[in-house]
Picture 1 (cartoon, helix red, strand yellow):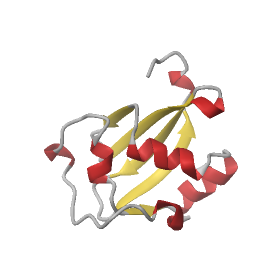
Picture 2 (cartoon, one colour):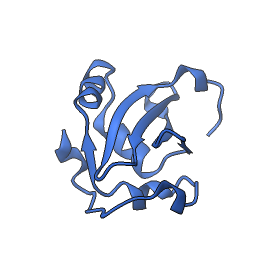
Picture 3 (cartoon, helix red, strand yellow):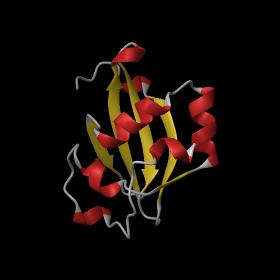
Picture 4 (cartoon, one colour):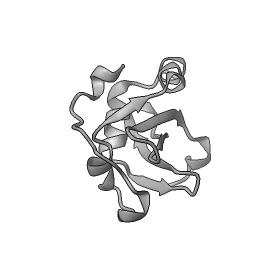
Length: 112
């Protein structure tokens, strides 16, 4: 699974308080990733294409930084009936760890 993200470079460390919250922050912060077993299983189980994951991490429509040390990357996937893909990343560990991915039903009415 890691091979699909080979475009990411090394990242020495990340402090979530030191970056602005905007949809372009993903490019700088997600250069080296670790993918949890759960994340990999969820991609298969939920039929989430790796290309959608890459798009969401590189150019999210929305990002949410949470107090629990996670960053949520959210993108509307037009090829999947405009559903919203949410990818949760633990940014308090080095390298950053992708925890899970799912289509968020709560966001169906949200606009990009």
